[in-house]
Length: 419
Ligand code: FES
Ligand SMILES: [Fe+2]
Image (cartoon, rainbow, N blue to C red; front, side, top):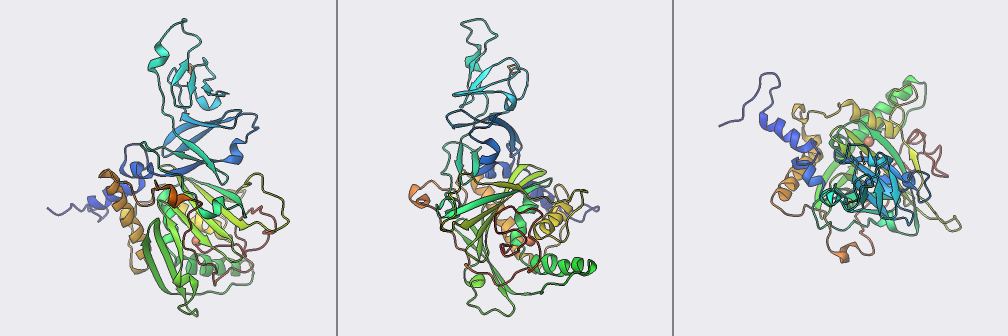
């Protein structure tokens, strides 16, 4: 029988169900199970420094509230935040070398989640042996603390080239966005928005402010190709030859939702979209730049806030990153993708969603999805992904973001990547 179409929306139940499959990330949901096959940044190292006064912080990933903590020896723990005694938050607890104690009645949990002490109970009580909370593996790499919330055994934490190369330095811009992860991640698969949002709309805003306009360019061709870790996006700008690296090489969307984009001067940016829960996403702008001879060694990867709103709480239409965030957020907290009208220029978005749905089915069949790495040889010394070394468009004079702290990048847009 055909799918039922409701008069209110004109869209089928199957389309609405597909929307749910794509957007819900909590435990037990199809997308939640798929996303749990990957490591995700749960915090930055700078948010939980080795010498922090308070060595535990509350975090949330894939709809799960968690306590992240660091013992004095530097080792990390990640456990369910809610204490199973009477529900206080372990993220405000007392960190010890081998675990964390609840602040309320001092029950102690080790890094595997096992309750190992209940000081208020009679000596010899074995009640603690029957109490265990969720605990997850964590690893530190490239300025992030990564967590794996999926089934055992955990795959390898992918060693992306620019996150681990010693001749690169990094910084991390953080945007905390109150919307679903998919509308953030699929922006990469929509290359033509550069012409409209970042060029035409920029000029609209700049004209109204009495500022000079920027050149507008058009895409001549688009291509999207599946590869080992996701989808490569390729574009040919009008006026460029077919040997343009943006057309011959392009750059990847790494599944499930990270773009690796290129900009000139050898700089690379990862846009890492972390599903916090159904309606919140952490967007990390992870910039990787060649370490210049004579520069001091980087001790810690610095973090900075990349806001989507100004101090009055309004969107910032003249800034490039904020333009993207404006359109992602203005789609709603979980946009109803079943109400869209996708046409030829949306073919990247269509391929991305279709591939995600196929990957969900793989997980339902008990297979590893694309991009899960279990072979050390692939991960050593690092994973190199295709990326164009040069891009042929820019936004001269337009500020990339509201607050970019990396030295020598202030007031310039030269680092602004392709999106
Ligand atoms: S609520 Fe945690 S020990 Fe009582
Ligand atoms: Fe963009």
